[in-house]
Amino acid sequence: MVDLKGQYNDIKDIVNPSIQEVIENTTFINGPKVHEFQKNLESYLGVKNVIPCANGTDALQIAMMGLGLKPGDEVITTDFTFAATVEVIALLQLTPVLVDVNDDDFNINIEAIKRAITSKTKAIVPVHLFGQCANMEAIMEIAQEHDFFVIEDNAQAIGANYTYSNGTKVKAGTIGHVGATSFFPSKNLGCYGDGGAIFTNDDNLAHTIRGIVNHGMYERYHHDVVGVNSRLDSIQAAVLDAKLPRLDNYNKSRQSAAKKYSKALEGIESIITPKTVSKSCEGICDTCDCHVFHQYTLRIKGVDRDALVKHLNDKGIPCGVYYPIPLHRQKAYLDERYKESDFEVTNQLVKDVISLPMHTELDDEQMEFITSTIIKFING
Ligand SMILES: *Cc1c(COP(=O)(O)O)cnc(C)c1O
Image (tube, rainbow, N blue to C red; front, side, top):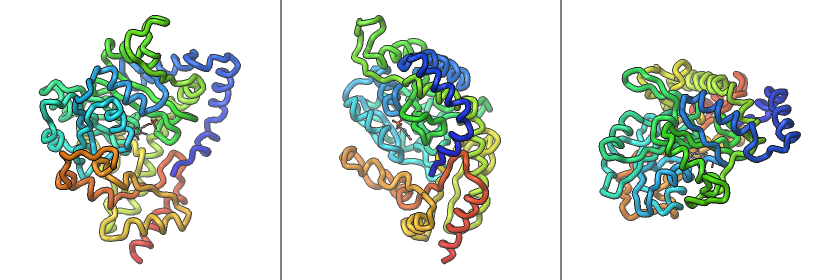
């Protein structure tokens, strides 16, 4: 699914000395590399504050802690995402309220958000799934009207642009009150272990969060709030700082691979190729960065999806089903308020989706083999 080795070989001469420097300096925690990376990421994203932390799940949790959400507060989020998004809501004793998604971009559905609002609703967590932003303009409008917080789960869309209807472009993760991302190795900007970060333009919130990541300390050994221990270590920061200047090129490689996949698979009746929904972009995005293809996800119609997965695996082609079970049907997140009829789209997507290998090192020959194997299977 990913080729981290190929990418490493390409940047080895930059990454190795950068890691070596951390080891020589023995500044393993909160060293200068962490600060450098933080500053560079702030300027890349055009956001006032980046707070690095230990992983993307922590980033989401700490963002919610920083906003002061209270047990029993309801948080509306998508039924079709990685479990980390709802897990942290539940861990903080907030109530996750899962809602259905769109069937074109797989992102949280605006009408479904509106229907789920109650007097207890306090926040919305859109997830920019597979590399494309949710409808942030509509979400921010709802939030403004009801005084909700918006926490963007940007684990899959770092570097993506969001274009407002007036044409203004901003980076994914910097639109809501706070954004959270992950630097898990297979993410678009991945380190060589675990890592994450929180983004916000609100300086007061940033100050609160900087204390929370470090045991609630704002002054050494003074613990003003209950915090956690969640740090990006300096070695990971060294890797990330070496890769950040390449992120746009990495995302371009993904877009170019997506475009080739879609070209090879277009016109086949049982396949729906991924859609980009930004008005600034036609067809597959390779100009405006509205989709950075963390995953390239097809929908398969009228053909046994699981048999196709098995066939591809048998031919040595890795592929994934993200996600095979909707969150509202996961034991940990059952809630009597949910009705199956509220989740028509996710209930269908879990049966249809298949994600093809997607990374920065795909070559034409590999993609040709993958698409021709799919086409041969479908044509029987
Ligand atoms: C990867 C991911 C996370 C969690 O990130 P970790 O760094 O693995 O904790 C959260 N949300 C989404 C949507 C993700 O894809």
